[in-house]
Image (cartoon, rainbow, N blue to C red; front, side):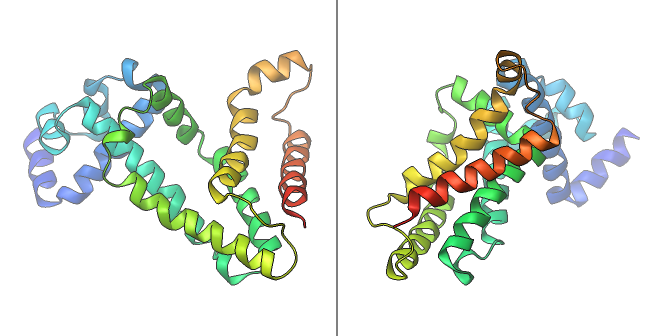
Length: 212
């Protein structure tokens, strides 16, 4: 079995790397960088540790690879929104709605970000890819804002980076602190009606801020 697994892996290295990444994503999202164990990742990916180290070097490099893939996934999904093909107000509405739903559907993404921030972002600072993949995204938001200004719908002087941080923060804080907030305000924030109300609030806030 081990020989077959090894031979199969050597014949399809891309598939093996993806299995390792998928297993590592689940492990890091559950336990964080400090609590994650390479043994468990290797077992989940059905590879031996030696092969894991061959592809990714060490646990920190594997964690960086997971972060890069996680960022790539959300940026690719955002490009699929085709924000430059619709009106500016609709484009911003789509971005807010997408960001909220992506966070809901991919809680592992938020957990990975939490873990990396506990380590002061030291892994993403070493990445050659993260900044490069975000530059087109910022340019896309800037283009939408400029179209909104030309159409007389948006006010001038909005920083696309600040705007996106606000959009992300509106959903991120709500979800990452849902347990304490639900207790403090005696309201189950994850009930469908409260999640729906949150999304409407986010859209109104962002569009209200942008309105000329």
